Length: 70
Image (cartoon, rainbow, N blue to C red; front, side):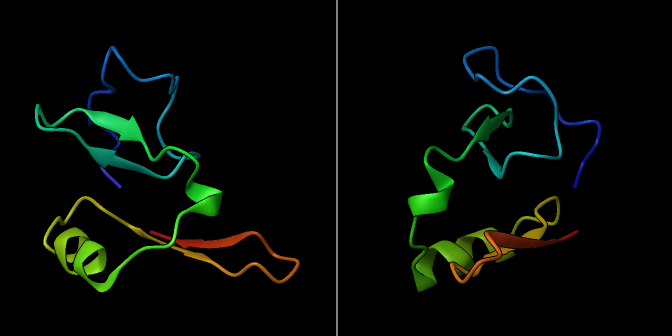
């Protein structure tokens, strides 16, 4: 959700906002690899909830690929 976040030079991402992403250890944005196939754990969600810059994306898998709420 932070439009001012820096994209990591090692990331294939070109812009923020379309690809589900996280911060790396240098607090630079990187895309979540194969996010459409990823199953998040409770521990993932608990960790992500601690980051105020993260929005929510719900993968439905039933005709609608994802629902994104920022």
